[in-house]
Length: 143
Image (tube, rainbow, N blue to C red; front, side, top):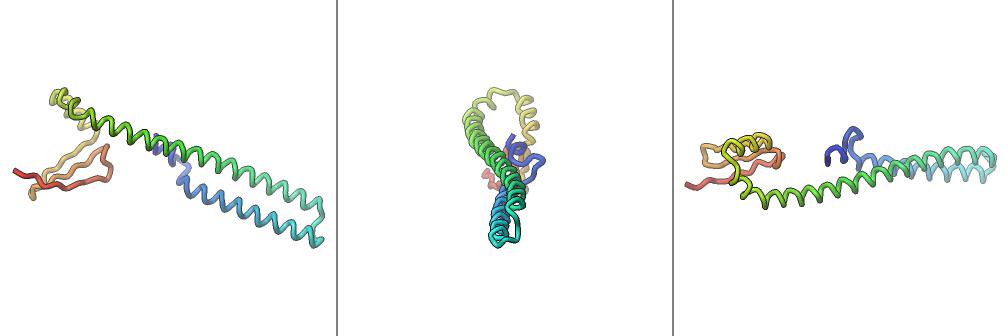
């Protein structure tokens, strides 16, 4: 859910927000330029009105997109908080729940989590899996 809401097919939400904010700033600069042209008599009031309407459409579209991106960002932040709460809850339940499973059930669970533990000749271990993406701790095992 976090990956889907956070990026999905739309790319990086932070970069998109930055692009829309730049589009808003550009529209404001262009608007100021149009007013200068009209003040100098280089543009009629009718031409100014038409151009300002187009800029308003651009500004409105940018504001809508920014609102959508902000809501999406808040949703992702909420999901991240929920994820941390859920993982903490599972961590508290895990030892008792794992003890209650048969060896076959534990093995099936570890496969589902893509949990992999490698014991190295130097007596260190490496742990990887679905709950620890990119996490490979090394810990010396004492005998």
